[in-house]
Image (tube, rainbow over all chains, first blue to last red):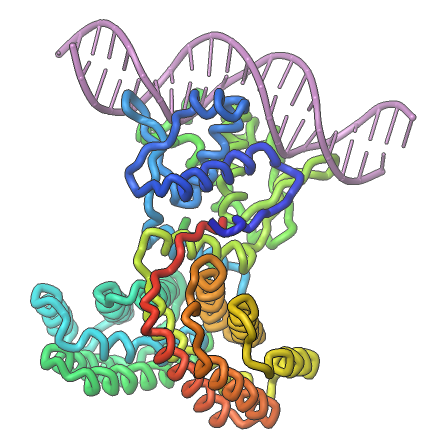
Length: 251
Length: 251
DNA sequence: ATCTATTTGTACGTATGTATT
DNA sequence: AAATACATACGTACAAATAGA
């Protein structure tokens, strides 16, 4: 409905015109994920465009995660809700040429993760809670080598990500998940967390256990303050690394 | 296309394969925005794909904001850094089918905007500060009609957005800007803020003025607490509206 | 299991538009 | 103004996938 940020480029006028038309069609008709759009042939006739042009337009929308196409009888272009992963990949592309430091990411974590923790106190499903407990136990021992250390970091970030995904605020959930993903990619693709830090492991493990207790007990304020302390401790230990976020297309 | 034919044929296998190839090419060669990619003809030869397939691949990347194409001599496909607006449009698409409430947005604002304010204390360029002051003066009078009231809300959100854009943390800047944009779209496309509220105007104006003082004085803690109070007051006045975020494609 | 109909996916040739020199 | 180099658009033919008979 909004004036569809008209990217008034003269270049691919026809193709983008068709793409805009399709988006407007979806909005106007109130189509939902799974609903079918007119097929290529119909669009060619209705819009007076060539097959190639129509196809390019649908591919563009598919690239944005809005459409999915299927071949065969009953096939066609179908509305698709943008997946979480796709949206994160798009956002990662945005930051590809920007200089996003670990400190930047932690500033957001400190502001947001305590909020998630408080919100989820007493609301974590038993199944998830059991998994979280098991993971925490799995890493009850300090890491023996760098490979294991890296695995522990990734697992810790996965925990934060999963907790965020349970959060009922979709935006909060997304942003926190995105940050965890970025840090996780960093851990994998660079040598972040490389200088072995016993303190990091020890504190991390302690905070995780304490946090799970607070979440299970439904104590929102304890969960919030524990998470805050956890994040601030982690930031202190991280900031020294001063690493820059990896170049990582993930589309 | 002789031997290179892949065995794993999903749907748009060829096209997406070319797109992936191009992304990998950019990363591997460390190309920067403005750098040129091989032209259509070269890619057709190098990859053994047809013109249409190559074109569709470049259009997909262009739709993701990673490429721009120019016609004419010396033209071709050029690396483009994803624009802020484009990234926000992609993210807005993600939330199109999700139920994002005003309360959700305010939860993030309360957590993040005080951080922005504290960070920017004493760091707002004089030119920006002058504009902020002027805008605040422009709305020193309570709104006379709903049109004026809406204009004031949009202007207020624009201020928050511009302040966020000055923030050196790219992620914090982006997220806060995105929230302001979502709320702004909401104001324009729906009747949000419609039930006239004198209290909302009065408090908003007061907080803006106080905030500018703190920012200019370089008092980070005053800026933080003022912003927090501002956001919490606004949330209280908003939550009653319980509006749902507009359906708004912006690609 | 095979065939058939439907619909997208790929290929290629040609023509047109557009910007640089 | 004209030639050049490149993307853009069109049309047709055929290949591949899939649901249903």
